[in-house]
Length: 131
Image (tube, rainbow, N blue to C red; front, side, top):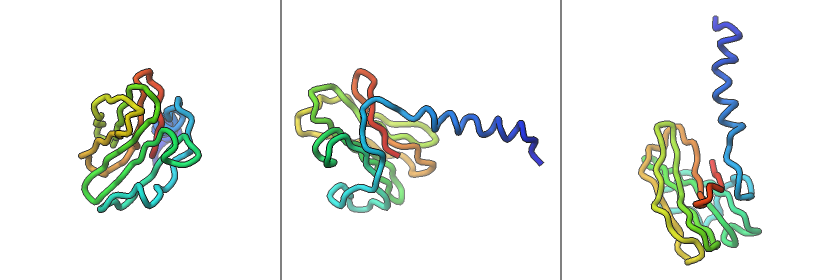
C-alpha cells in the first residue's frame, strides 16, 4: 500500500501542470476541429481559436495520426509567431514567421504518445494552447 503522503507527492506535479496551463492570447477552449481543418489520415483533431469563427483570428490545431503528432496555426496579426507540438518526450518548434501574410505554420514528426498539446506562440511570449 502506498502511504497517503506519497500519493499526495505524486499528484503535485500533475496538479502543477494543470494549474500552469499557458495563458496569454485569450481564445476559446479546445474543441473538435471543423471538417475543413481535418487532414487525410487524422485520427483526431482539436482546435483553439480567438475569433468568432476559427478562421477569423488566431488559431492552433493539434492533429494526431496513427504514427505522427503535429500542429498547425496562424495569426492575422502583424507579429512574429511560431507553433509548437509537445509530447511526453519533448517538443518541436516551427521556425519563426510573420503573421498577417496569409501563410500559416506547421510542425510535427513526433510520436503520438502521451500527447501534451500544441501552442501558437507570439515573440513576446503570449500563446494560445490546444490539447
